[in-house]
Image (tube, rainbow, N blue to C red):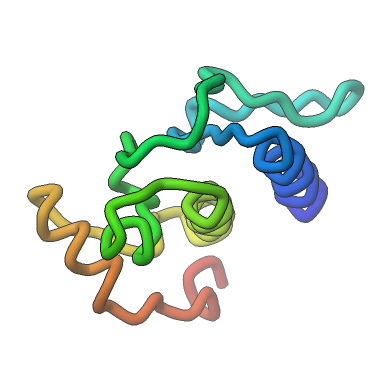
Length: 116
């Protein structure tokens, strides 16, 4: 798990350095190969834009500021890591507006006890 998250962070940092971002990081867009490492799928190769596509892992500052950038990608990677470890996303809610509100206000539950 640590290797996946580390490689994900390295890939996202390289994209940000080039002025790009992923913008839609989620489990369906990650592929792991023991031989080759991590691959990101559905990469958005465009300059940063003022929107986000994935509310499941939407960063609070992205919601507040209305801008998705490297902070949002890193938050999404952390949320995805939490989801992989706990078996559920760090924040849940329905409809999407409730989910966005919880990203800004709710405290993320501790991982202790989720996978005992």
